[in-house]
Length: 253
Image (cartoon, rainbow, N blue to C red; front, side, top):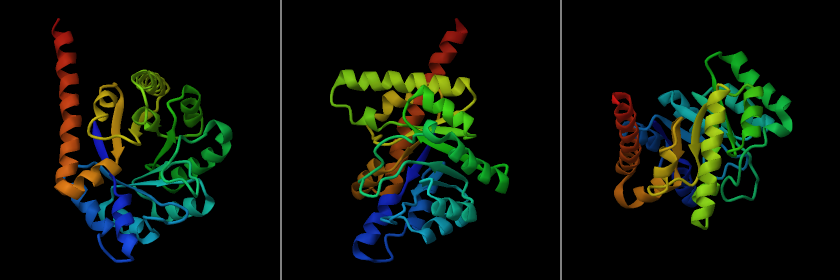
């Protein structure tokens, strides 16, 4: 399993004072050097944190940008001009503090299919992902729309008020992952994941990558960005090792 690191809030800090620092580009290299598999940025329509030039430079210099974006025509046009390593289509509301839920792919499969085809037309190797709720219907729609990946929205799991709600969400996520793999989609996860709640999510078989940002940047305030990334990777690797040892134990029998 891999870790993608969202660096939006490095840009939030920069923009708070209207300075040129701290630099999201610098942050991109720090997280990659610490072991992250990609750098995730969300180019919002209101440009509240990451800006056009940020994504252009990060994509060009690292070749490992995962661009989160709405399906807005202007944003899609920018992404097509940049052609980052991967794009993840997310829902977006102007006044939301953070993404509040998954994309309704089933509500307009044709529109999303046009978007995925436009990226494939520009490069057959382009990777597209839909950020969806852990919902079989949405996974099926994502497949129909031509997405390569789905990214499971883990926000409801992370924000569960009770243990029964948390377990209910874990069950939904596990079922959605299993179905997505069955129909040929690859699966990532993200939103609200931190150093405590990542364990149970990582134990679910089938995830390729976790995209995590706010908790890592928050820890970095006290421990440094590189070390914060390394600590999250240590957790993911430990779960991977436990899975491997468990599988080998059964094989031996």
